[in-house]
Each structure stands twice: as C-alpha cells, then as structure tokens.
Length: 152
Image (cartoon, rainbow, N blue to C red):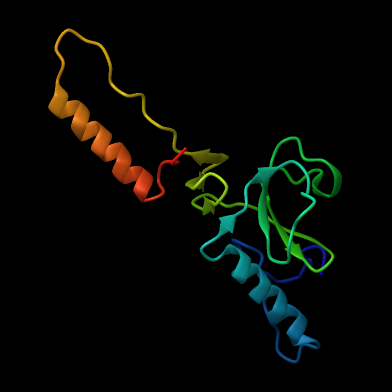
C-alpha cells in the first residue's frame, strides 16, 4: 500500500478506517488502521527531509520538510511512512509529539512543528551568582537527559 487509502468513514483525528456491518474485505480496513497505529504510537522519526532518502527501510518514518519535492511534493509537515514500495502520509494534529532520533530531541505539533532550543548560558552582569548559574546548567542537563532539549 504505497499511499494512505481514502475511506468513507474514518476516525476524526488520524483517519483510521471504521468497519461496517456486513462489510466485505474487512482485513483491508483493519490492516490499514493497524499500520497507521503502529507508525503513530510513540512515534519516532529518522529526521526531516524534503524528499525520500536513498537508504530507507520498511517502517521508516520521516518528517516532510519544506519545500517538499519528488514523491513527497505537497506533503510538507506530514509524516512520511515507508510501506512496501511506496509512502503513506499522516497529517499532523495539534498535540502530536515525535522523537527525532537524528537530533535526539522531541518535537511538538501545534499549528507547526516546534522543538525546544537550548537557552543561552547566563554570562556577564555586575554580580556573578555562581549558585544560580550552576542551577541553570543542572536544569539544562536534566532537560537534555530527558530528551526535552537536544543534546547537540
């Protein structure tokens, strides 16, 4: 299944297909829902790119960067999931979180993809407060260890 199928009845957030009584080929609907759930639950992306990379594997998930080209054209900000010989795409929804395994940090979708950036280390001033600086550095280290801030 190279692309996400369009179903007449689907869940409101991620368009997971819904089954109907006496429906033929239920396995197509159930398998599509399971594949999307597998890709989106505790989602980890390999990184962000405007087009497919050369060395992708089944199940790889990428964030489509702007401007998208090639097979990903017009799919900016979507999650591209490798399936079989093609790509399925999932539209992000507000509150969606992904782990960027390339940079070791978490990203949040709220109208657009956002990621935490490192705070500027406090420098200068007329009075040096070593305890405050140590506390801030400890906080930044803890946030990096939790994956909230990138470790780069």
